[in-house]
Amino acid sequence: MKDQAEKLREIMRKKVFAVASGKGGVGKTTVSVNLSVELSRLGKKVLLIDGDISLANADIILGVSPKKHIGHYIQGNSSIDEIIERVDTNLYFVPGASGVAKLTNLTENSLKKIKDILSYFQADVTIIDLPAGIGKNAISLGMIADIIIVVVTPDPVSVTDCYSFIKVLTKSGFEGKIYVIVNMVRNQREKDVTFNTLNKVSQKYLGIYIDLLGHISYDESVKESFCLQKPYVKTFPRSKAASDIKDIANKMLQIA
Ligand SMILES: Nc1ncnc2c1ncn2[C@@H]1O[C@H](COP(=O)(O)OP(=O)(O)OP(=O)(O)O)[C@@H](O)[C@H]1O
Ligand SMILES: [Mg+2]
Image 1 (spheres, rainbow, N blue to C red):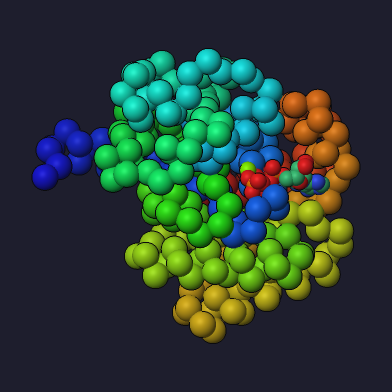
Image 2: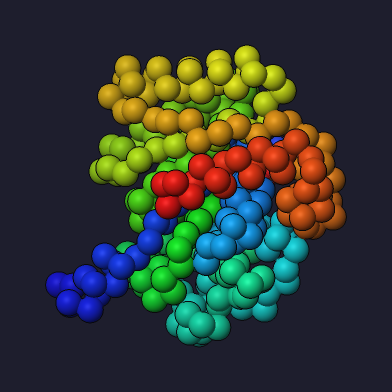
C-alpha cells in the first residue's frame, strides 16, 4: 500500500522520458546526453539517469568521472544524494555501473529504489538512457517512464528491432505515449521512409500510434565529440546535429 505522502510525490512528479531502441549502437546515449544538456540550458531542472545500469557509458559521453554510481545505491552502500552528480547549473546525473554483472537483472526492490530517486529528486524533466534490446532491464525501466522516445536509424534492422521493443513494451502494459527520433539521417527521404515504416507496422500489428519527435542528421561532429568525450551541443554548437537536437529539445518542452 502506498502511503499518502508517496501518492502525492508521484502526482507532483514531472515527466519522465526513457530513451529506447531495440538495436544497439543507434545513438540512444548520445541523444540522451545532448538532449539533457540542451534542456538544462533551456532552464529546466534535468535529471539524466544512465539506465544502462550494468554497461554504462553516459558518463564518458557527458565528460564526467563520477566516483559513486547507481549500483552503490541499489546495493545499499550509498544514499540517493551521494549518487546524484551535479554536472551544471540545471543538470544532474545518476551514473550507471560499468561491467557489474549482478545488475543485469534488476529485482522488484531495485526498481522500487530507482522509482524513489524520481519522486525524491523532483526534476522538471528526467531522461533515462535505456540499455539496447528487449531484455528485462530495458522493459522494466521503460515501464517507469511516462513517455518513451525510441531512437531508430534508417538501417532496416534498426526498424524491425525498434518494432520488437514497442511490441514487448506495450504487451507488458505500457500505456504512455511513444515518440520517435530518427537518428543518422542523410536526407529527408531516409527520415520519411524510416518513420513511415515503423509507424505503419506499429499501427497495423499493434494498433499503436507513434509520433515523430524529430530527426538528427548523420554528422561526423557527433563521432568527433564522442572521441573528445564531450557532448556535441557543447563542442560543436553550430553543427547540423546540434541544431537538430535544439529543435527536438524545444518540442519536448511542449510535452514535458
Ligand atoms: N547523428 C549521428 N551521426 C554520426 N554518428 C552518430 C550519430 N549518433 C550517434 N553516432 C555514433 O554512433 C555510435 C553509437 O552511439 P551511442 O553509444 O550513443 O549508441 P547507443 O544506442 O547508446 O549504443 P548502445 O546500444 O551500445 O548503448 C557512437 O560512435 C556515436 O558517436
Ligand atoms: Mg548507450
